[in-house]
Image 1 (cartoon, rainbow, N blue to C red):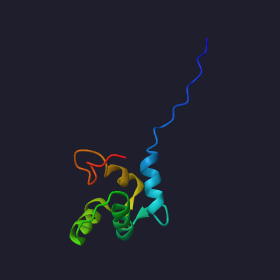
Image 2 (spheres, rainbow, N blue to C red):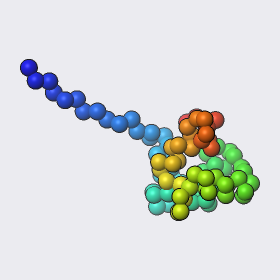
Image 3 (tube, rainbow, N blue to C red):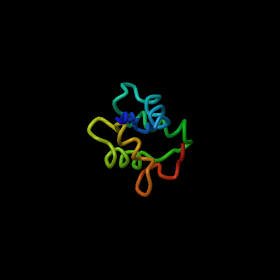
Image 4 (cartoon, rainbow, N blue to C red):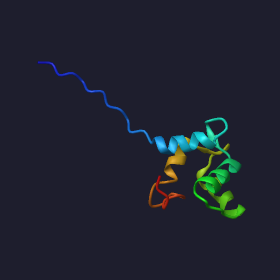
Length: 86
């Protein structure tokens, strides 16, 4: 008897992806301006310009924060948004 292979689907973080796509203009990365808009509208957070700049330096790449690093921002213990649940 042959067993059929089951198709496995990867668990998609749809909440994070939807939030990322809502605020990114080109769907590749979030710029500094877009991440501040996201934090103000979705999470009601406002940080100083220095904190936002350090977020972009630590977590961002050359152009901004990508989808992969955006989902890592919500993971404990070191993520920037570790206390926020979606």
